[in-house]
Length: 95
Image 1 (cartoon, one colour):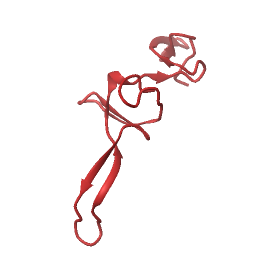
Image 2 (image 1 turned 120 degrees about the horizontal axis):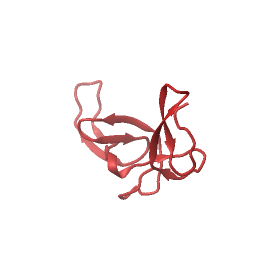
Image 3 (image 1 turned 90 degrees about the vertical axis):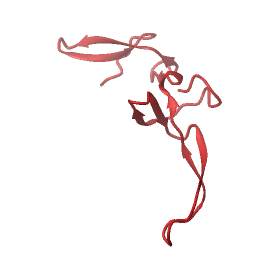
């Protein structure tokens, strides 16, 4: 869920994480128009809309149980595996 900016309150699936730039690309959020020139006969020019990256600090995970933006914590599950959990309701996010 986006928590800041013109897309505030909207949610979508994360398509890509850009670790070195600390940005994420969210599906159907933060569209920008890209003006392109035609390249040969196969690629047409024109105005294309595509998703632009958002800074990672402007998005939060959405808990399926609470249906609210959440902060996550880590705890050891089954004695061995480390899993993420919702700090509001305690639901384990990694299945």
